[in-house]
Structure formats: C-alpha cells, structure tokens
Length: 151
Image (cartoon, rainbow, N blue to C red; front, top):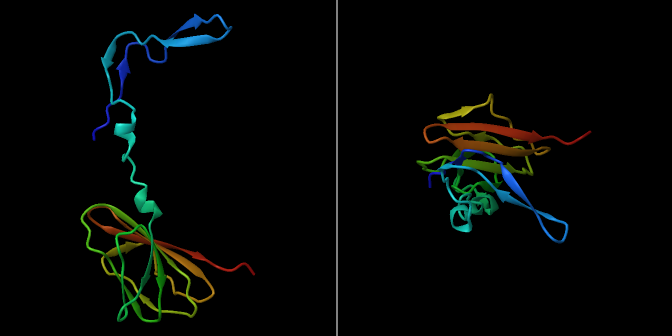
C-alpha cells in the first residue's frame, strides 16, 4: 500500500462551537482539500506492521556442526564447539537475532560474505551473546553484543 499525506488549505484550523453543557466542540475547518490522503482506518492499518515476526522465538540446534539459521527474527541457540553458522536463503530484507548462552567455551565459524562490525568475538562460557545479522536486500551485515558478568 502506498500512503499519501492529506493536504489542505488551512491545516489544524477549527471553528469553536459552544455547547449548552459548558463544553466546546472543535469542528475542522480545513478550507479547500487539495489531496484527501490515505484514510486512517482499521482496513488500512491492520497488517501495516507485521508484529507476528517479532513474537516468534525459535530454539535452534546445530546438526553435524552446522547451525542452520531460520528466517525467524529471534533465535536461541544450543551450541557445541566447532559450530558453523549457516545463513538462510533470502531475497528480501530480514533481521535475525541469535541469543547464545554457552555452558562451555565454544568456537564458532561465522558465515563468509557478511560485513562484520569488527573481529568476531570468542564465545566464552562466562558471557551471554546476541549476534545480529541483517540482510538489506543485497548484503548481509553482522554485529553482536556481549553481556559480561559484573565483578
């Protein structure tokens, strides 16, 4: 859906009507309507934002050393050492967050072709990790947050 702004001669202009109970009613007085704009109603707004993806939490595990990521937006991974992250095949923009809570230190092999924010972190059992992968329609970009214990 293509959204269009409403354009009027006198935006935010109203006539005041005094009511018998002491209240006032503001009656829109926009003047000439130059462009009606897209109506704000349930039909147009329902589905405008897909909240369903943000509610999906997928538990994933490595199979034969490969952690196949899904297109779900939030994934929790059970990993062992020498795991390779495998990106999903996608053609449209996508954001993935992978939460890792390791019980031991592990070695990850990160996907090639991802533009990382810097050197990939070592995964230590003392920390919790969130790895962010985003596909903008052409390139994958990656980053992470490391939550270290407070000493």
